[in-house]
Structure formats: structure tokens, C-alpha cells
Image (cartoon, rainbow, N blue to C red):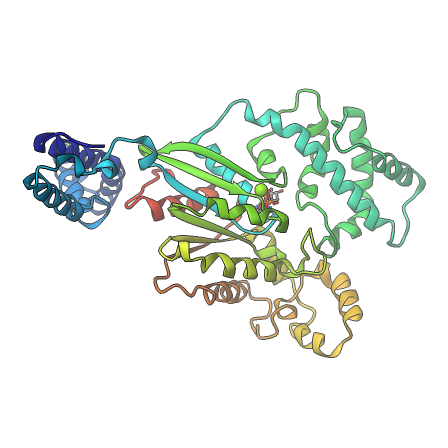
Length: 450
Ligand SMILES: Nc1nc2c(ncn2[C@@H]2O[C@H](COP(=O)(O)OP(=O)(O)OP(=O)(O)O)[C@@H](O)[C@H]2O)c(=O)[nH]1
Ligand SMILES: [Mg+2]
């Protein structure tokens, strides 16, 4: 934006400054109020003191905020000086103040969700939408996805179950055949629920479910199979948790824009499968925060797209590539360790041999595969993947070890990094996560309900 004279340019700059002030004012005020109420539990009962506090603290806070965070007073004055010099040479039009324009694009914050496949990026994306852009029509779109998930997972379960002993009785076998013939894109009918229920409750099928770490099957099957009658009822509308549990592999890039405390935020979700990762590079420009999601539960599982590669090792490789991208040298990262709910019991239930990592040195690999298949229901040792891990079945130690493995890969001079451990299905934990992410892009960000 070009300005014809001094007064106009100065006015524009003050207008731009006031926009910045306004953007941070409310979050600061809310934060200050909460802190003040905590400190002065008695005096806030005095109704006269409260308005004074709000005005006082608000003003002082805004001043501090501007100095220490994003107001760029320094560039304000140096630009003004540059403008003065330009004025001297009568070249007023040469001054470009577009960085302070009221342009909506300029104010938009960009947050990018990265990570390998099935780590929970889209679940976090959905939690963001649920919080900042709820939509009444959205739940119904998840019904066919949920039905598709149930059919696909039941078919995998049956494939695994048929290789196990004892074989199922005639009625279960007949239901298995029926399910095998289902088209995944057709919705499930009410009368079909009984086949899912019968097969799911069969002891041999439960044995196949217990071995789920050794083949590809959706983690959400247990949740959906236990409420199959509700899912197939005619008026079924998926609940928020049903929507979070539903899985669709993201292809390409999905974006959503919403307003948070007066700021426009652009959230970008990408597909995490190997074939999708080459598209990520188009989203690397002008990123305000990278959220990298890791599936903790993948430490004893193989990739969906390559059954010879361990998921956690793939997460580490992928993270190393992303964190050291030169464009992200000064970009804040939020590293999220997801699937805490499945990881914790798996690590803790490992009783059998904390030294199994040692075994891999002495046993031939087919035998290791066999051992892994049979010990999976009992949990699995982290030392099988990382022989240098000595924490056994202790959840905190296992988590700290994995966290350290990731942090070691950050070779940037300024390590702008926040780490979190979460279960993204839990709305409370997801909110805390969102709060952390937003705090890294908006100074003094405050979500009253987080
Ligand atoms: N148990 C459990 N399941 C989770 C958690 N987070 C996500 N999920 C489930 O994991 C599955 C995959 O999650 P998505 O969010 O679709 O994974 P993604 O990273 O977007 O995967 P791609 O789109 O393939 O890259 C879904 O069924 C989610 O419900 C978690 O913390 N715990
Ligand atoms: Mg996805």
C-alpha cells in the first residue's frame, strides 16, 4: 500500500498497530484476570476493585505485550525513520507499508499437521474443527465411513482367525462367509448386525483380535463392534466420539480456516502414507507452527504400506527429515506423542521377558517373528526395537526414552520445540493439545476451558 503524504502514512501505521493490539488484548485480559483471581481470592469479592483491576491490568499488559512480543515497535520506528528520509528526497511513493496493511491474508496463521500414516493427524484436525468450527451436518457424513471401517476390519479379522485353532462352529463359519462377501461401500443393514456380533464374540476371533499387532486391522474395531446394533439402527447419527474413531486415509491435502481470538487460522492436514509425503513440500511456505504427530503404539507394529518396516522407526526417519528442513529453522514445532491409551497398557503388561531385545541377537529372525506373534497379547518390550532401552515395563521410562530419541534428531541451533503426550480421542486431552499448539503461535494465548 502506497501513501501520498506523511500524515497518511503515520495514520496507516497507527491503524496497523492498533489491529495488533486488539488481537492480543482479549487473550491477555482473560489470562490476567484468571491469575489475579487466584492470587487475590479474598479481594475479588470486592465489586469496586474488579473494574479497576481490569482497566489497569489490561493497559499495563498491552504495553508489555507490545514491547516483548509481536508489535514490532522497533520496526515501526525504524520504518518511520526510513519514511522520513524518503520524505526528504520527495520520494514518498517509494515507501511500502503493505506489511501493516489491513489485508486479511497477512493476519492468517498457518499450522501444518505432519506425520506418517495412521498417527492421528486427521483426528486432531477434527478436534480443532469441533472446537472452533462445529457444524451440524458433519456427523451424518461419517456414517458410511464407520460402516466401511467395520466391514474392512471384520474381513481382516476373519482372515487372521481362520488360520487359528480351534476352528469356529458352523453358525459362525456361515456368518464369516456372509461378511466376507460384503461390499465395503454398501451401508450395513439392521439385520446384518447379528453376523458381526456373532463373529466378533467367537473365542477364536477374540484370539485373532488379541494378535492385532501382527497384522493390519483398524484399532477402532473393538469400539464399533461393541455397539454394532446402534450403528445399524435406522436413525443412527454418529456421536462426536464415533466421528473421532472413524478412519479415512487422507489423500492429498485438506485445509480448514477458522477464527480464534480474532485471528484467522489456517489448519493444514496431509496424508501420511509414503506415497502422500511428496505433496507435503507444497505446504512448507510461511508456516507458523509445525505439528508433528507420532503413534506411540506403533513401536511393535509394521507400516500399512510396507509390512517390513516398523512404524516407530518410520516416524523417527520422517521426523528427522522434516525437522531439519532449512525453511523450518526458526519455526516452532509441537511434537505430539499420540495413542497414549494403547501404548501405556501395552508397555506395562509386558511381564514375560524384559530382556527380549537380547533375544533378537541370538534367535534367527523367523523365530523372532513367531515369538512376537505369540507374545503380542501380553504386551511387547520396547527393548525388542531398541536394545539400548533398559526401562522394562515402566511407562514413564519408556516414554522418556522415545521422547529423547526424537529430540536428539533436532539439529537446529534454536530448538523451538514443545512436546506433548496424549490420547487424541479424549476431548479434554485434545483441547490441552490445541491450547499448547495455539500458545506457540499466539503469545499469551488463553482458552478459558482448556
Ligand atoms: N486408540 C486411539 N486411537 C486413535 C488415537 N488417535 C487417533 N486414533 C485413531 O487412529 C485412526 C487413524 O487416525 P487418523 O487421524 O485418521 O490418522 P492420520 O494420521 O490422519 O492418517 P493418514 O490420513 O493415513 O495419514 C482413527 O481410527 C482414529 O480414531 C488415539 O490417541 N488413541
Ligand atoms: Mg488423515
